[in-house]
Image 1: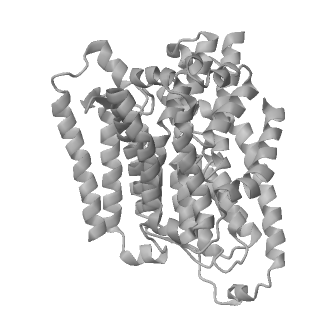
Image 2 (image 1 turned 90 degrees about the vertical axis):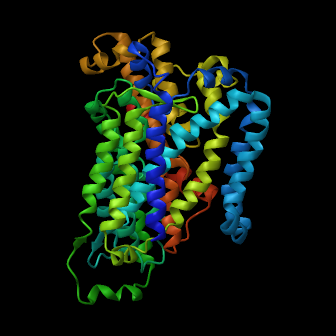
Image 3 (image 1 turned 30 degrees about the vertical axis):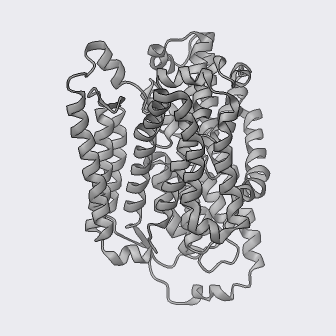
Length: 504
């Protein structure tokens, strides 16, 4: 009952924002062309306040962001008991270390940017994760799935294909529990979850705007819905190599085990089945709401000085509604079978509340382009492989959606192409040298932002949640740096270098 009451509180809160915002914006709503322009704004784009602020902020203002990342990396290793009980306080500490002087020195500009990133970015981000986490928690794949190399490879393949159509977060939340159950008897299974993050939580979302947030931003800014299918060669190349590597690694570890605990394979087998299948309707509702938010143009309202498109509030309301309906209509025993708990979503909510606060200066400085203290970085980007590595490298540690948008805009500015021509250029396929150059830049930005989100736990939304769910199930996941040095650097970085030479 407590879970449902919390859900209804969120539902009522969103409705209140929608109704109250409509009232607040009724006397000052943009009209005519101004309203259309406001409605077409990207949900994560920083506005003029942030652009101007980014020109003023010194580089050292990103230190609290570095501090929270180091805390996530180090505390679970050196003080696991303290971290488990106090990680919300650590996140709040770094958020306040940044926010208090930020507000003191920049006053209304600082408050505007803080409200902006929480109302436009963080709250919708958490609502989406909560809805997908809740809905997927009611879907149970039954049967005797045994974590043999071929079975694990097929499960990762299914999740990879699914990711472009229900999003990397949706695919991750649906597939992680079947993968964990299949490998419950395996002693060596950490690598399975890490490859799951590589493929299902990131690279698999390359083919449609529904797959990954950066591609959805491109869709909002004129990239045709099916243009991202042109990324199929890169996606197939990278995912095929990773699946082959995974099969070989998993086969090696499987052969090292005694398999005494795998005696279940000789026991009575139960057929593969699906329970809680009605949750797929709610999942479709979430995907549909996200897609409609990029198509509908209902104008915008102003809440506390922040312009928010009405269709985005409708999207958030629908996602909450789908999650609440899943809670009300799914049998409790199905969630118990999935070992469902709220701890993973709580951990993500607390930590990312701190991350979103401390990330403000990094994104602001980047958004200032050549007028910010990251000018040396922005000005050095001239070739497709530059865009690939810089957008990918930053997406590994920053939010990959605004990173994509910054370099998308940078490419347009460098080639002096107005955004209104993006759709026409991409549909025509590039009949002149400038158009061809833009297409090559856009491919590099898209692939870098999506692929390299797999480099760290915070590179893409589902990464950290998959880690949390796996740890709840007893899997010994590597630390923040352990993941980077044991998996990302030896496996992903060589792959991305090969992708550079083959495609860029």
